[in-house]
Every structure is written in C-alpha cells, then in structure tokens.
Length: 397
Ligand SMILES: Cc1ncc(COP(=O)(O)O)c(C=O)c1O
Image 1: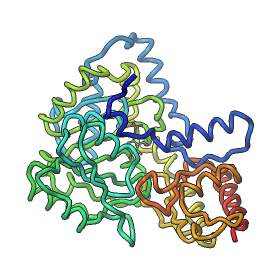
Image 2: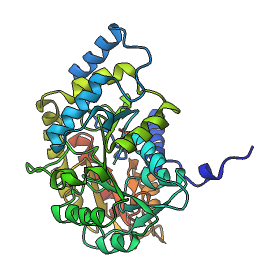
Image 3: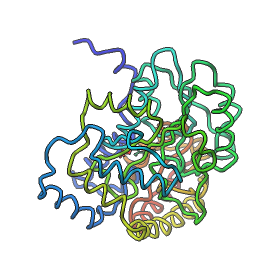
Image 4: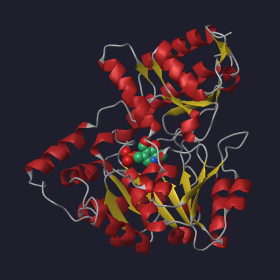
C-alpha cells in the first residue's frame, strides 16, 4: 500500500498520545496523575445535558443543514454580537464538529502548495500539521525570550506575498498568555499593509480568563478589519463539552461559503441533537461558567505558586485557559543516573515512568525547555503532582 505524501508529512497529535498512554496506565491499575489533558474535569452542566435529551425526544435525530441548524447559527450570531460587538449575517456562520474541524476547513479553504501560514510559538499542536495537510508551509515564529507575546520582528520578516494566514490564539494553549492591545494593534497594522492576509483568531478559551478586564481582541479594537478575520470558537472548553464535538466559525462570506462547501463534501452537519444542546449552552446565564472559573482560579494560584517554589522551575501566571506552562530548562542540564536529562521530551518520559505523572513536553508546542501541566484537575491532584515533582528533582545530581 502506498500512502499519500500529504499524510506522511504530519505526525499523530502528541497531546492525544500522552493522554492515551496515561489513561492506559491508569486502566491497568497504576496510580497515574494526569496533567496532560486539555479538557475541563467538570461534567457538562445539567441544563445542557437536559437540552440534548429533549432534542433527541423531539426527534432531532436526522440530517440537518450542513452549515448548522438555523437556531444555533442565530445563537452564534447573538454570542458574537454580545462578545465582540460584531453584527454578522446568517451566511457568515458555519457550525462544525469542534473548533478543530473549523480550523481544518479554514486551512483547506485558504491554503495550497506554495503559500505559507504564520504561527507564533508556543502554539497549539494541531496548527502546523493542519497547514501541512493543506499542502502549505507553516512558518513557526520562535518564542520571545521574555514572555509569550508576539515575536513582532520575526512576524514582520516572515510576511511576503506567499503568506495567506496568520494564526492568533488568545488566551493561548499552551501558555495561557492573553495578547495585549499593543500586539493586537501590531497585527492590525500588518493586515492593513497586506490586504490579502487573513487572521484566524482561535478564541476557544475566550471565556476562561482570570482578569475582570475584557481581553484585547482584533475585532473589538479594529472592527473595520472584519473582512480579514475569521473567528473560531466552540463549546468544548467553556461548557465542559469536549466529547460533544461542536465548534463554529464566523467570518467573511466568501471564506464561510468555501468552508461550508468543504463541509458539504466531507462530514456534512455536526451531530444534530448536539447542536440543540449547544444553543442552550451559548444562551446560558454567566453563572454557569462562573462556577468553573472560580475553581480554576484557585487551582491556577496553587499550581503556579507550587511550581515556582520548586528549585530550577519557573512559571508565569497564565492570564487565561487552564494550563501552567513552566520552564524546566535549568533542570534539563542536571543528571539522572549519571546521564544528563537533556530534553523536555526525555523529562516527560521519565516523569511518567518513575513518578507516574503525565505532562506534555514543550517541544510539542515549539517551546523546548518547557512543560505544560493542565490544572483541569482537583487541588489534591495538583498537590500530589507537586510532591512528585519535588521528589523527582531530589533524585537529580
Ligand atoms: C487552542 C485550541 N484550539 C482548538 C481546540 C479544539 O477544540 P474542539 O474540542 O472544539 O475541537 C483546542 C483543544 O484542545 C485548543 O486547545
């Protein structure tokens, strides 16, 4: 059998792989602590589950319009109006099987061989491979030395006539960094200078922010650039609905029509009754999310303070999402059993083998020397994980 060069150009998702390994070890009865997961540990809220049951009972079990049921597209428009101050028409919305699916459709619609897409490190693992699947070249912009903002000189230098797409993700997975207004204004300047350039704004963590101030967003600050911006979002993270597989994209009509066409010829509609549950999620009162956010806030302090108390580890306070992205660079120079640790990949392997602690190495996100620890877990798990890390550090020469 000969597989396509396209599929040979990509790797399996490292986060999904580590997660699967940790789950398998747990299933064997091993006492594994998993901080590798990218999903809230809460159940989907009861009103959303109930809406799904009612949708099934009401017979919403057949095919639906490929781009999403009208009532959900309307709920998405309301959400975008409330959150971004953007009035969009029905043909500017497409509902898909998760934000990941929206991203895939967008890359397929915008990219082709010979063109490039700019991705700032640290980046979510799927962006570069989705660019490759579209036959294009991802340009991975190296991290800044002093934080997780945009590497503006690298970005400016990488833009040429081949560049079609710039990916923004704020709050970010893996760093939790929230882009500031200066970075957003910088991007606005690039868009004005390059009218064919499109920004793909992955807003999947937009409700999971720890400041009372609204984070800077391209469309709030520069609504005139809506014709060059595709917003991608979904219900997975905000409403603890990762397994339901529902996301949406909002953007320029031409691009949305192209994404709808791709969807028509590939997956068709996202699961019909899930779409009705998503309407309930999007129209739910803020208290539904506030409860989870309160828990995440306490966990964030506990893990970041705990990490910074470990010798050789440093971690900035994430402004959003539920990940601590800590530098272990100093420790990588230390020895274990006479051998230098060397890489975060090796570190993650050893942590799983010896301490039964699953984390994701920074290399997977284009940030060697870092480790991502998800704090979508209870405070007791965080405390135990910190103890295991402390024990591990104690075994290093
Ligand atoms: C930055 C980012 N974008 C998109 C997704 C995909 O979300 P969904 O479950 O809606 O496909 C994830 C999930 O981990 C993510 O972290």
